[in-house]
Image (cartoon, rainbow, N blue to C red; front, side, top):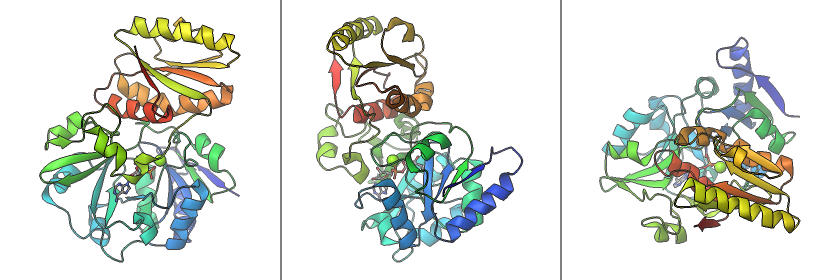
Length: 356
Ligand code: TXA
Ligand code: MG
């Protein structure tokens, strides 16, 4: 049985829901909870048994380490062996918020399953009142990957969590839709630079105000500046797996102008239909009416990558509900959080990017 507590952050019943969920965590259970990015699947990061339960529920490869969530800077001392000066400045600037810092782990502080045997741990302080309250009341560092089955789009609503994990995990704290919509940016400070291991809610442009950003092309993909190395030896182990993928075959279309992209997509849709495919299109709201497909899903507005980020995972799951077999997605402008949106789209497409 998966217990579900409705707990809109400002609503009544918030405190009782948090206390019940925290009790489950303390007993070694797995509780999904909202953060500002996506829903996380939490467990006590000190307990190997609890953490193994996360891997089992997700079907997650055991060499992919988990992010540890804290509610308070004071909690850091229990987890990490030290904080360098640049990491401390990034925490001052971005915590609570969608930035995960990779730091040296304090030996013996966490289950070795959390770090997958690495000498480092990814830590973040989420910017969500329910997440912070849950971590505080549970009184432990909370290991939490995204609360989806491994390989599926990350959950941005409690319903997404239940679609994947109902009956498998002990509880879900339902705080409504998340705000940012894509996961945190994972970084490591080294040699005076910020190395981006996974692009996310904090943009490279925002990080650049603090230090030079390395690998900000940014995500170890073919064609990205400095991407080749990261592609073959990803530093965030999770980046090497297929991710976020809808069941239909997806390709991302990039072109010299929105009109060129639209007319190519229209042509390809006609061809795919003739071949018996059930077709889908992922387009910005302004372009959705241009397409004739079995499922046209609008995601975000032109020139507003933040709105695309908020709607992306819900849209990718929507294609599965529509049962489409062939999906074309308009590329999103790669500035700000648009870099994270394109990173996820490319992964969902298994690297199939069509450049006109
Ligand atoms: O926004 C987020 O980050 C969400 C919410 C729930 O906080 N969490 C999340 O966790 O996305 P997950 O497990 O789906 O992704 C964690 C990423 C993976 O790519 C993993 O390889 C990387 O962070 N990571 C974790 N610990 C690391 C470490 N010590 N060194 C390098 N990469 C690490
Ligand atoms: Mg994930």
